[in-house]
Image 1 (cartoon, rainbow, N blue to C red):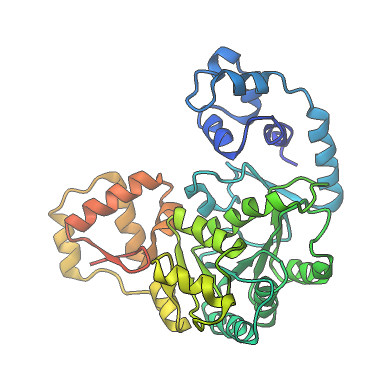
Image 2: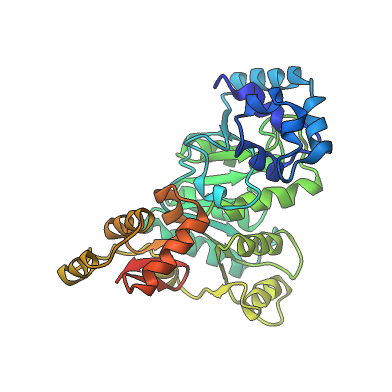
Length: 368
């Protein structure tokens, strides 16, 4: 275990300190330094203030973190802290990324292509067929499938991924000392054995209480390139996940259904309100996400034109990334460049204005 894990775990246990506040604190100092910092320093940090600074100063339950570490070692649970290299980088573009993730399995959480597939727990035959066909057609693109390991569409997506030899990751709303629903324990083991896994931001002994599921849903939405909604009613977890994905500027796709089918009412609503793109076939999905055949590099004319344009270091970094890997989703550009989202957005805009970069549907970019 990482020597800093004790303090990293403790940070998630401090009252009044959630993921947003933890992210702010970590922009100023390391986890251990937070607990040794003076209250006067902490309370001056924007977003922290005297109450939260006092909560940090008064925290002494490090024995709870020690117990958690023993449990993790016993059951071979990985811990991924916000600043770790293996932490899912796409989540870093969200305003409220989990401070710490508990992971079982060897899944690559930074795979080049990750898709969340979600839907109702009580799917129709149409929903089953479409889920299985979607995942089957994605097999050639080697996509990692993410879902919530729940009944219905979630389980269908995980099982279809296993049949098509795709890695699949289940995001849980409770500690990894259990699997909920219990009937999916065997499925979870199969996912772990086949280059996938399960993960959660909740410590052991945390039960699958109702209020944990929206937190789980934000991870499902945030760690993928895009989210596909198969079937859902107007209300429910899938609609929450789709809304979160929109808030994170992720692409959302929805499968249309009959106007009279309540299980398709949510999908139809997402399409109607432009919160999701209409999904009719997988080739179109692959094209919109830029997962098709990689485009060739710049022509000699384009390279010659760039010689007469003075680029900033950030703009040059982005053009070099796009020259090798085009087109790319903006989240992937953020990930590969190591630049902040705002810097990448500004640099891309400048490159567009200079006619060096072309913006494509689905937040994709490529060199002109």
